[in-house]
Length: 417
Image (cartoon, rainbow, N blue to C red; front, side, top):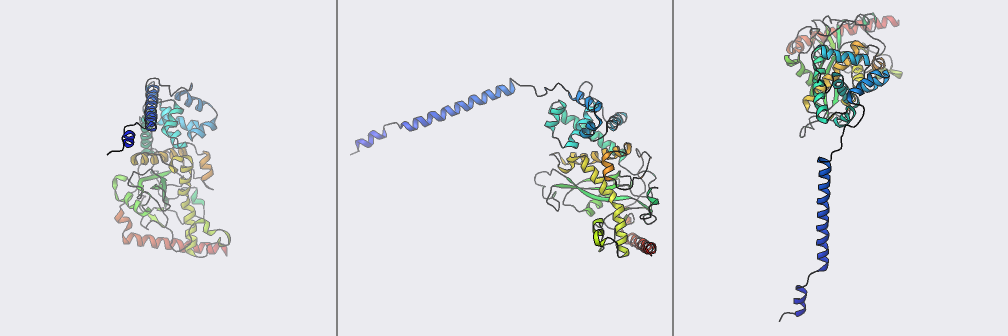
């Protein structure tokens, strides 16, 4: 026979359960109402984003007409150079103006603001009082335009075949490196790697970077830029890629001339590295070990001192454009454009403003005086990877290096006697 008490309990409703259900229903209803309010406020009661009384055009005009230091701090160049850059982009039909929307000056200012301050699109849109879509579109167009300008000015002078005239008066370098036309080295630029490829982009410090190979002359202008390689690639591999593809247009020097390279590159007909297994870097010759003690150390010390021009170029480049040390989440192709565009801006400033304060800090004790305008200069020389690095070419360059080393040491000992 069933227990009447259990039957009674089974037919009763739990009051605590009813309260819980009511609270849940109230919470759901409250959340739904809140979502509805937020939706209405976002899509039907929008508050304007661009509310500053100073438009992007007015902001650029104010900066260009204000204190010169303010323009330099914001756009990373003097106001006269900024105006000249905009005029050149117009003259060469590389960047057209959006009539009544965004001027060329605004577009260039947008690029300089982003690369010079590592600013994201949203911050830039707020500063220039345009929508995100407008900022992104004009940034892409202006970046491509500056990249195309780089194709004209990132190249050696047409008559580059030996040391510039000013360095020829320096006994430390002449006549030992008489036929040197510049230096080559690689540098690691911050990168944003695609998902699944981060391992390939990690360099030896485990940072996400791309390995960029550059050549420069002794006027601290870049003459070649090869970007896009993952940070894990070594310098020698990047050089092989640059030299092995004609479409990359590596600027081979005239026959008999050469670039200075570090020990990470192979010796070849156009590439002179230091002696291995001997002190090389300048800091190794400080303190009690200041003086070279062997012919190879003397050669390496002077080789390093002359090749430091490429390190100074990298120093100015990264100090001026912080985006190269902390890249945004751009596509790989756009990151390559950014590197070339920054190098183009570096060259443009060097060409038209030799008194620029960043160059003054980094350029060192000598400033080659080269008044030639490199715009449109043809690439010089010719060569090929197989010819440059075959056994005969490597043996000839090695013998040439030994001859320089012996003559340099004899002169050094003779002057000390």
